Image (cartoon, rainbow, N blue to C red; front, side, top):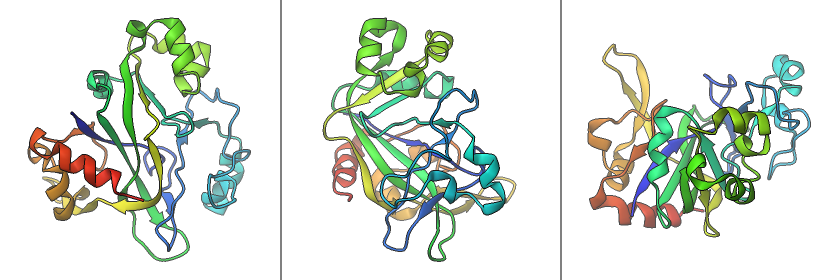
Length: 238
């Protein structure tokens, strides 16, 4: 079995904000902007899942006119549980097997109470299938991954086809109801503050071979000796 952690969702580098965290530890998953401006789902016409707001309402007032017409890159999507990415840092995800776990974490910040930006587990896939799109076959990709951003838009699928890694979660996959913090503040070699895995979470997931930064990082793979415990911990989250 394999367990891997992956950062997803809007952040200050892609979208300019953190996702909203509420006092009761509930949250909303806000995807990143669609740079190609292809998708008809926009921050101004798309509601969140739990709090009854349009996604654009989570942006500062002075940005809402701008972002209301911005297309959204829904990936991962938690309706049919698919994730896709054609970039080289995510290429190893193609090696995930049925029963492995892909754990998603995001940057969140308190919305209705003071809570500094931090990184939180927001959901996970218990993997049903993974691989390169070109090796799965066009018919299977369009059938099994039809809701994925990269598949639902023919022009994007054609462009990404050779390098597109796709992961589909099974029926036990979840977008969590409550977020679980996994970060604390550390410093890089220049002394600048960065988000690193907290000591508590290192007991669950390990230290990734000393690569503790989880601020903007490639997927972090849990060492084999901790995999079973890490999976059990993630499944226990609300």
